Image (cartoon, rainbow, N blue to C red; front, side, top):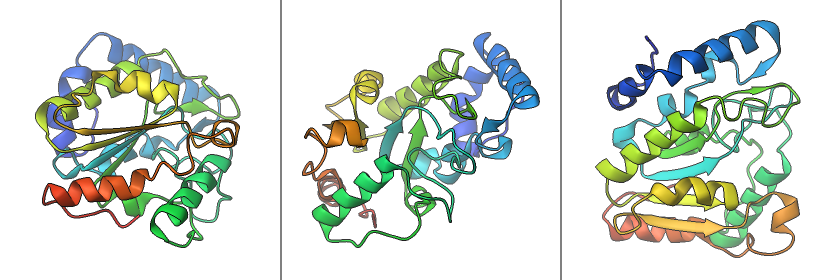
Length: 221
């Protein structure tokens, strides 16, 4: 099956496109986009990979589903398009960055500026039906994104993985913690964050300190 994504990812994930599950997944997604409103726009489904090539990846932030509200999802986990109100989880992420690094909260919630610095903003499921959270789960996307994580863990060294919440931590169980920095915290959603375990985790300064210790350029969060 022919799927076009960024070349360094294409090379590693081509085998997934050729496995039996992927044509079934592709047909499901095609039908959903034909018969329902779905997010992100079709051309942005693989945006996380396109904006952050395998060879340039330094940090991985795992999300679960794309946002399912009008105009929000842009194919990058936790990110929203310019001009869109920041969702509560993203508000809490920016609050933690401000507390951790003293960086003012930006006007835009578009995290493309992180992606182009080497932050892979990867959702476990790459598509969703409008206003129906989780509607495209367990159709094959998780298998595909597990394969991407496995390639990163196996083939690279000195990555930072940020696993926020039980779902991301379970998905990240395949990561080799002896080769990479694995940071875990509660999910930044208000329900989890307000009960402790998110604010004060200082993941962003920890990530930069680790990258610097490995001779890698820090992320401008």
